[in-house]
Picture 1 (cartoon, one colour):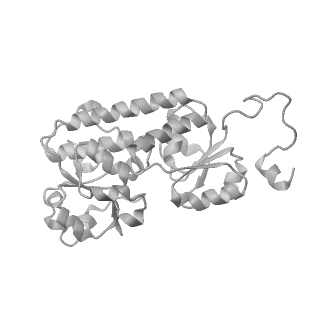
Picture 2 (picture 1 turned 90 degrees about the horizontal axis):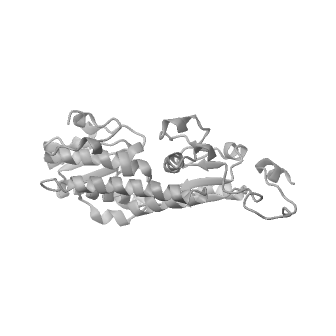
Picture 3 (picture 1 turned 180 degrees about the horizontal axis):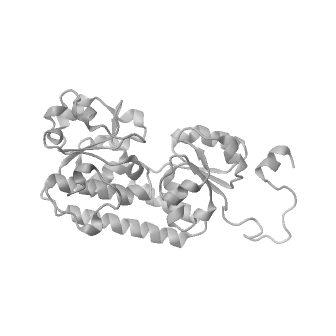
Length: 304
């Protein structure tokens, strides 16, 4: 066994006399999750004991914060990950491609998910459940999430109209149109004002001139700046934005990024509920208490 194999805990030599799932190690037992959504999914599957390390941005569920933190979003502590001796590392998107490349070069097994739509989020959950040997739990979780989304869709049918919605996922430069959020806005009762952007997976291809938002005149603005508190004064002070219907009527809301910008269970539960509550407030409809958010919402919505 060479030094690198020893460091990673890789055993060499003859196969066991009788091959079986147990003799080969079974399903992954030590998993490092480089983003929040796979961590939350494993907890919801009841497989949290398999998690050996998490992203430093992990907040859901709160119990996951006690796990070793090994990465930011586009950087990672490679040595610390190696010390954890994972048999699987879960990454997300092209933004973590360099982390994945370096870990693969070190001999680790890496799976990079790239879910961009609601359907792909559900597929990710089913795939991850299969990877840890709990496909039935995965089906049950995906079914529960789907049922919850359909309840929100049913509630949105009571709206007297579907307001035009602009969602901004970053402010400078102004970025909008990420696919799963646009789909959730539609499901929650709104009409995205830049529907053409959702087919562009890269953020750099979804950068907007703020003046173009003025011409689309959204009735609701929902902002979620990744890892940063939204500054509504900066939004409303943009040139020409004082004439936007959403600004004039006071329908500018924040949904925290941890609830909506992670393409996983949070977006399909808390995220869509907060969007639905904001849209219901804008059109003057009460939301069934069963469908209200569970977490802290924008101050404007707390009494609605």
